[in-house]
Amino acid sequence: MIRVKLFDEEHEQDLEESVNGFLSSLNDDQLIDIKYEVAVGEDLEEDDSIFCFSAMVIYKR
Image 1 (cartoon, one colour):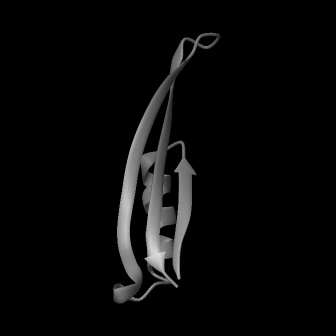
Image 2: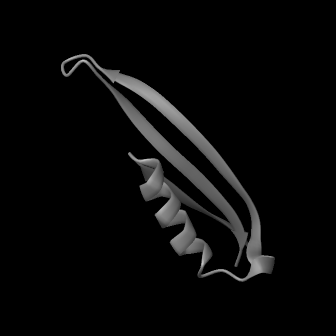
């Protein structure tokens, strides 16, 4: 069965740790693909940028 696991973090290092932690629970032959995306928004009240780092791991279970 093919499954997906979604990750969403505000900092890229946090995303890296989360994804690596999950990948360590998989065997090499279970991993199919990893999709990565960065989104940027503006917080007009704080005059700041908001980053969203996300990844989707596609794997066989």
